[in-house]
Length: 537
Image (cartoon, one colour):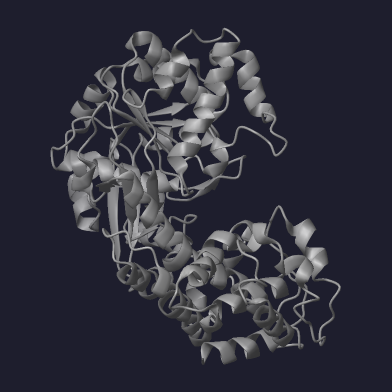
């Protein structure tokens, strides 16, 4: 069986293989989209194919939508040619449960794939036509948080953004610049309303997108590269909205085990590729069963009935509360704990760590004992149930082969939100004291031990990329294994509120962190020994 429109014609073969097929008229939906597009998406990677495209297909199958998605790729045009074009915009999404069961389904909700890296002029023109169409309701994004960056630390425009500012809408090359050029086409066509919806996994994502778009638009208007009134149009919330969202679904690199499953079902040409820009992608996406998308319901041009596809449509404050629940208590702190300790203990897969009873007890204590007393309850999702899914279903799933080394990237930028917010909440809560915190200061100490660049067997260990490594590593590497280390000796690092989010001395945790660090510095096997003690508390 080939993953092409021609290959889908032999429906009986797909049915025998147990692979689900779309239940709508593909040709009709493609024609409708061509004539009156409603949904553009920027970023054609795995999270889009496993989440947004699947949600659209549910609505198409049920007759609740009659147009598909036009996907736009600005960063890695090669994946359009080698994956979308090669398979007629089709993909197989394999949803994998922790018990080993799998659901394979052909997703056909993408009707057009546009290469917007400057190499295909016709695709650029089509994108502009979509932006100008009165029928367009929403533009969604999965371009990563870095895609919204427009300025460097010194406040100057990034070189790529400066290129777009200097050369104007006709030669925009960044994702945000291309979107801004598309919005200019919409402004000129009739100032039509539109929602621009970031679904990237970062806090206040809608605001980040809005700020980035306005940054370029203001420069263009000031320089006469965009007409007067363009910025006012973008700033008019009744015409152009930038809703906040919270997305949560793990879609790792293509798994060879899933490729093998599909090959055994007689599917052809399922091998993954790595593009020249480093994108790992395959005709299939392996994804976990659990997923959440919470969206601020602010769509001035209307929207598809996304709630019918399992999306939580709510208000802005509820999105913020769900975000805080996830990143400060129920998922991200547990991920960071497993990342740091996984690296130290020699693990290279998260699901393998979840077979380690000591680590499981640690993350349970972080979530249920230390986090839940101060968790932000969003009302629409139960925090305990969310954490239960994370600990019992999501992290242990062997088909989601995420690596602690990947999650340990940029840890210095994560600790303040993932642990600092809980520590702050304890300090502000009249009936709680940081004296009861054990697992959280243990993880902070484990990060200090991680910065030594030696694993628990004192073998050299490569640290994951982190922009502050050059600042923080020298603050611990003067210590020797076997030293007794005091809180005062650690003051240069433990006093960094930009890293921990709080003053650990004022919070009453500096001595505890120093004590745990000393225990883990005792020698070979000391990290495991300290973990056993903490896990048994």
